[in-house]
Image 1 (spheres, rainbow, N blue to C red):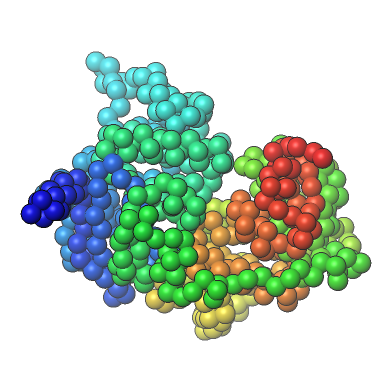
Image 2 (image 1 turned 180 degrees about the vertical axis):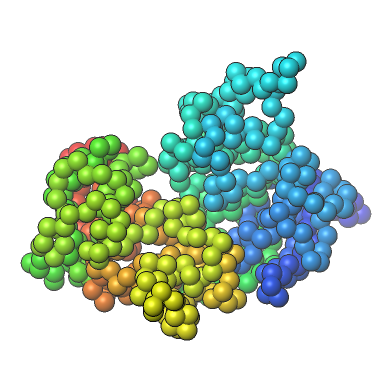
Length: 517
């Protein structure tokens, strides 16, 4: 009898701790079912990991939770009441706050204005905004997450990692009962991630329910209490994180065993060392952070660039692609001097660049998939000032098929695709120029393990076909698995050039932090 009473008490206690419940949520766009009867329960003071491949429906599910979309079917119960949000502001005012994977800041406003956007700005008797108080409030929020950013600084001047910290501060500017974090650590350093986890634990103590979306397994198991797994828009399972393991989670997410996932073949660097490099850089410097960089990449070789945020990795590839001015040094393509002062120059020499932020720097979100894919070569399909759409359609379908891009139609807006499929569209565009060198900046950032595997296969296939690849990645396991050689940068300089066989995570971090043997 006591055991029965104890179980009943536990169930009542568990029920009373539920702050939000979504049941049987279904949603379709243009006749395509994105969510099919998905469920989740969020408890006060818990971190709930939402897992699934890109395209599994996680982002749409969170947008319904936050009032961006309304479900076609299903119910949302919040604070024991049925609710139906009409817009994101209504959900936010009731205590549901979201930190989006793709940063949603206003670049032409200050940090302080961005942080307090959506709240009531303090005003004086004349109705004028008290800017000093705005900046003081923003400063307090920034300090609470360990950031020393000046609230008066314009967001347009910030790095992606700094913008991420501003997003976190903005989410904390309202008294949230439910906080959604979509890939919050994608652009953060280890130190910033540790600080974020401290903040998460503090929020848990305050009773906040946190939805945590991440493809980094070590983070999920370090910070989460429970998890829900989606696959192809359907609810698969929910369970305490202590009752599962990384292998089981991956298998459940992708629907196949871990040993089916891609493993890169052995390096072949030793076979190409005597050949002329496709890309050779000598003494390259810019006007900001890149200092005296010399490197080379051969046909068929994947060279990884590792380093901490601020080490100059992104600035280096931007200089190679003509996006920033070179103050000194040379770039050679197949042994011939290449004068590059703009992206058009780089493209004419056969250099392609996939940027770190696909939405801000790469894609035209309101244009169709086919237009995005062929944007760089559209003039080739022009006849007497008229575009040959039949040829454009045929070429787009070829890239969609070869890269395995999942979509409803080639006419679909690229902004409606999952992150992994958007990245494939961006890759397809640069492959359309038939490049000799491919510069990749965080090619699998915010991409799930299934899509990541497909992109890895794609990159290795391109290298096998003779493309020279220079790849930046903040994920050391990815750098180690994909690269034939690994260049480690620190404060704008190359600190090490390691063969794949001799590289380890410990050795890379040793050089990345500025230590020199």
